[in-house]
Length: 241
Image (cartoon, rainbow, N blue to C red; front, side, top):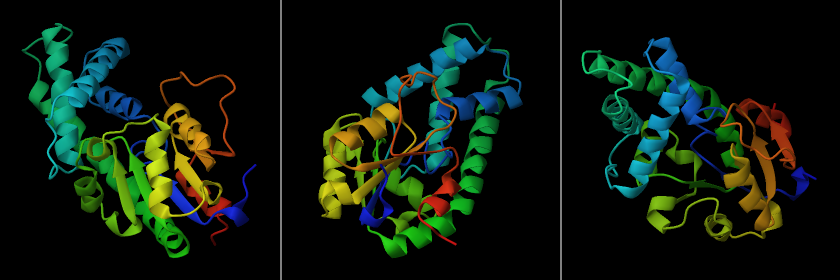
């Protein structure tokens, strides 16, 4: 049961929560693939997406100074490399143009979302200490700086830096420690049931699940203290005019 009166601090997830309003990034990218009429099936795209994510998890390709456009371009290049290698695409097709168009569209998508969220984040920052806890590549500081979000967070716990990845509850324990309050006075806000809500509960935190289009593999009984489908619903949850 969510108790706003008990909330004294907030832990936010980043990717899929703040940057895409609850939509899994595979779905954001797939929409851009469709918008640009890339001639691959969703199954082929999904294979390429998974390949790219696994590659980045094991190869230090992303550098700390890379902003989100840089990251998108690297990810989409990896995806197209896989699609070409598997001959899902042919080398004669306009891969370079696709890569630039998709990266640019997705970057603009985040810019537009973040611009709507800033006023809400500003009010929350005035009321609570806020820590960001994210599975990222060592460059989340550059990413949020590029989008003008740095001022809203008192601290950042990034998996590539601390050596702990969600869904390990220990990464949220670090967030609780940085805020310096009992876990029951902290609410975790994230888009992933398994990576955000479950480990947050194991730490004793309250939970708000931003439930959007995802992989479709959530447990049938997946729930949270509060479930929302739009980031801006936080205005009513936190009683912001």
